[in-house]
Length: 430
Image (tube, rainbow, N blue to C red; front, top):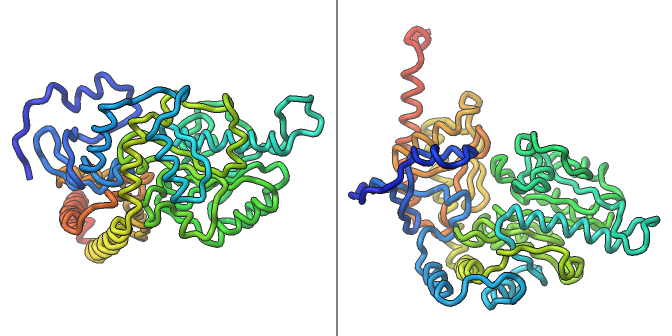
């Protein structure tokens, strides 16, 4: 559907003229959204199955969220952390009510939430396991190893890219922080061999998102919990992408049988408004005494008011029911398309979060599907170069899923037709 749109003073070409070239955005500029539909400058309509990389958890312009933003925007936005504010306290209360947490630290992003978690883990070790020969009053500890996992992603700060298990994000920014070990994901024996009294924390994504929506096994997570208990290390769950209802429950740990010591949340927490949170227990939180860590914008009143409205929507039984129903619908639809086109070797789903792994012939070419999808009014994602990733609104309707699948059909048909047309006739005959 295309409607006439007013002339805009900016174009996609202007992006390349003024922005640092670390992004390569699509060919159109969205200007309006409602629910799971988006319209560009020309008025062309798109079905959004990308969700701003799992951020638009309640869709675009949800009326309750818009109301919360508008109401708080007319009161007070920001006072910094020299003063408390009502929305931050209310959001922290809600998160503690709904999770294992007893204390909350607010930041602006998932990377900052993870940065806080990792700093807290090392500082906690200094408090509770000080170095025997350290001078009085010096915060030193030999217990500083952080174990992470290959292909993990924890953010873009220097600390978090070093902890993340993808060298492409950390190369060229050396020297790297020390004391970080990367082990194979879902390999409990490798962790068992590595852990020692030096290990202060293990950080893990219950579902690895950037590497293709790969879930940790229940045995792996339970084993990590036991090993952390044995070695007096903290278990950190990075739920920046898996949290805020993405996998079905409010946080993925709730279906794992494992409770972490620290949990990080962002992305869908604000439904599109930048906010991050680190959740932990009262005992562990005491390590972050006054002045030890902070964030000027973290916990600002406007962001917390928006996030509170989002959490109130995500925590309802109707939302959980919609996630389950739409997950089944989308999974069935993608499988039917794969029966028709045979493009995927695996279709992984953790709630409304899909990783569709392309057959070897199409490895390295996932981005081609994104570009063709734009032509057909469909917004999708990739995870690496081999996986098509979907992370739509958790409130997406059956109608929008159905329309998205129809447009997917057209995308696959065009991509395969173009591929066939590029094959020389002699090769086809042979």
